[in-house]
Amino acid sequence: MASIAEVRAALEQASEILREAYRSVRSAQEGLDEAVSILAESSENHHESLLPPEFVRAKERFPDQLELMVGTLERIQRLTVEL
Image (cartoon, rainbow, N blue to C red; front, side, top):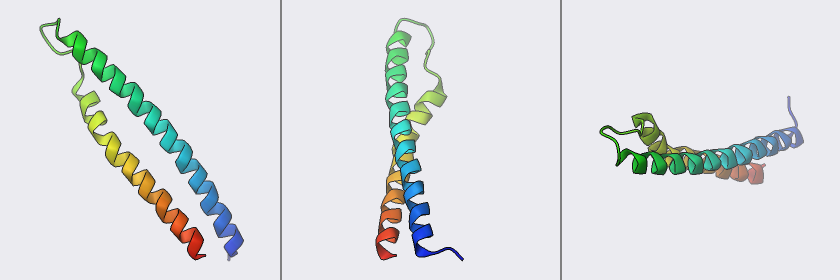
């Protein structure tokens, strides 16, 4: 059976991994936003869109993913305090 100290250590490790993942997702979001903007602008000069629909869907899903990560971090923090 794990001790409270071991659980806290595991929660802190999970928090650090989630914080790093959050930073990576934000960076990816910024890169995708830039790519979408460039492709949308370039599409104005072409007979069909250069912007893949998957890019638009991914762009729309980033906020939900970030919200989920923040909610998870908050829950980990609350759980750690309760221990």
